Length: 313
Ligand code: ADP
Image (cartoon, rainbow, N blue to C red; front, top):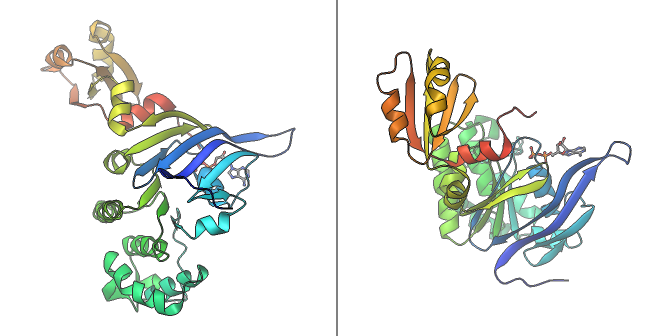
């Protein structure tokens, strides 16, 4: 059965998933609802274990939910997941390219999984290689590629079926800054072509740069949703002063209580959140053994406020 949805390409309603039996049940997805508008980049952010990868797997029909509805590219998942997946590209967390094949062969073999005829795939391969800046490597083996090249090939591979929507699970993890910038550029090109992207990332600058909207998820629940700018404005004071150095904590004990700021301590650094940092900065100028950075609030501040600063596994 094909269900139509004009404005959204992925609709998730009250999704629930747990693992284990009654005695030791772990709720992993706890009533999650969200929808992706066509052509947007939607970010799924959350600490490790929040349920991001499970959400992606549920949406692709690779894991069965306990309850809830998923409508992907007009098809109900998991029932019609196979049909839905024909319209979707996937960039998984780790590279799972086939080391027995060359760069071009990886694209050909992957295209065959979708039932695309070889002649159609072969006309797409040069464009995909050009997009991934890998034309010169078409006959290379996978083990001859750098990490950045492998990621670009994985990205090209996710496009072999000309998908409407691409799921990207931490696409730039492990890459150097140059390679990350190149991937960002390519993702922006895809968005300008009208593709929709569902992105999970631990890089807040990446999410802030690429996402039209994002959801912050923790313990399988959505705790905030909106554009990066709106979310920062809603939840965080506009200015941040990071204070560090040998005397930072002394300074906090002596001067901190007078400051009209919300103060968080993380390791050696004091984070002062305020809507007007003028007085604070004036106080800090000339303070001995204290250094500081004065900056606008960003997505990382929001993320840490909503999900806490303690480590997750
Ligand atoms: P994230 O991608 O946000 O780091 P995951 O979706 O990978 O989080 O995992 C969410 C939680 O679900 C974790 O606590 C993880 O241990 C648990 N989990 C994931 N898959 C399974 C599974 N197959 N069996 C049991 N627990 C699982």
